[in-house]
Amino acid sequence: MEKSDAELIAAVLKGDAASFEPLVQKYLPRVFATARRYARRESEIEDITQEVWLKSFQKLSSFRGEAPFEHWLMRLTVRTCYDFLRSHKRNRETSFTELSAPETEWLDRFVADPSAASEDAAGAKQLIDRLLEQLSPANRLIITLLEIEDRSVKDISKITGWSVPLVKVRAFRARAEMRKLLAKIAKDKYL
Amino acid sequence: MKLDQLNQKLIAAARRNPPSDHVPYAFEKRIMAHLARSPKADTLGFWAQALFRSAIATSAIALLLCIGTTYLPTTETPSVTAASAELSQDFQETLLAAVDVNEMTDLNNPASEDADFTDSFEELL
Image (cartoon, rainbow over all chains, first blue to last red; front, side, top):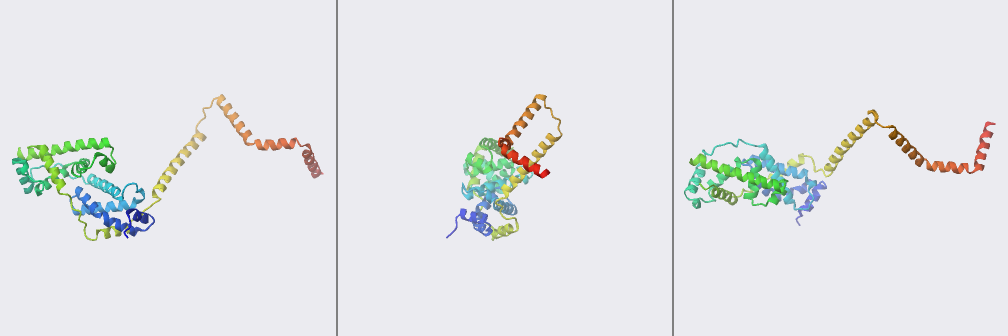
């Protein structure tokens, strides 16, 4: 019979490190998927994932078991991703004049007829990825959690450790930065 | 260009294309190998660290108080000095109350006093 998360964690805390492997196997896809939201290169994604599991092993004693292990792990994952974003602040002052062919094509279609531009198109995905990369780490985190993952403010507060008012303030700023970037696209591309 | 609509479209595009949850081959083995090389889960680490920090802080406070009471000039007024002397006297009396009671008992028993006197006199002889 398969052991529960609580049983596995108890075994790890008693010194049986091998009991950690089933936990890794079970939640590794989720950690990878979350890391891929914040990093693009596969090597960076693997580094984030490895760091998450290393931290979770070292801090396992702080898991109190009040909430599911998955929630605790995802909080740790998001915070590790946020640390990654902050430590890898790239040059975000790029112009939107050099968009890829699919991005340009999608935008042209949108300008001609917004309803004709499909959300499933590769151009749209590339463009939103490009926009998210331009955002500050905090704004990117908020837009990802609030708008893309559709989480509540309270949920984001729990995940990030920020207070509810701070999440609201940062959400306001993040949306403002997003609008600013979209206006820049319009200006660079069509004016 | 309708920016709000563009924003909505792009957010919808991100929602419709969630990132892959693909795991590289044997990645869990790599993590376990990495964990085997790293320090083991420390259950008492948190408490040990907290107690060590508090021990340092309390030692520092105790040291400062020692220095303060030893070297700093006293600013006691005569009345304060008298009060502290009285307090120490009261404290001493309270502490030695039991001994005083025993002594009082012995004094009230002349026979024992006589016996002691006889013993010491015989020793002198």
